[in-house]
Structures are given as structure tokens and as C-alpha cells.
Amino acid sequence: REFKHKYCVDVTDKEGGFLAGVLQIGIDKSSLELKAKLGEEYACLIQHHHAFQTSIVPCTGSLTPYYMPVNLYHIIHNAIQIFHIDHYKPS
Image (cartoon, rainbow, N blue to C red):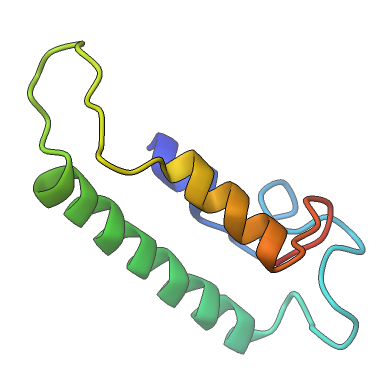
């Protein structure tokens, strides 16, 4: 439920949709095409999330932190810098 609340965007819902001015000019937030693309992206996120939980970091049932051999924070931070991603604009 928390994952869906955080990552599933319903463009028809005024509470859970996009804020005014967030979408690029020319993109209609009531578009069925936009809704379909967001649905596809959410389905892909679910698949990746499931693969991550079952294959990469299987749940051990304990509260012990599970450390990975890569620093995901560092990888994401580098991508933000390389691609000049602005936190206040859609990317």
C-alpha cells in the first residue's frame, strides 16, 4: 500500500495527480495516453521492486541492515550530477 501511494500516479485524481505547472506545456493531464504510459511505468516499477526484494536483497526476516556491495546513494547522486537533474523539475 505504501509503495502504491508513493509511486502510482492517478492523473484523474485531484489529490494524487500532478500539481499545476509540473507537466510540460502541451501535455494534457487528462490524456488517456499519459494515463496508459504512467500505468506501464508503475507496472515496471512493481516488477523491479519485486525482483529487488526476491533476488537481490532477499528478506531475512531480521532487523539487521543488509549492506550491498555498491553504494546506491552514490550512483544516484552521480547520475543527478551527470545529467544535470533539477530536483524541482520533472525528469
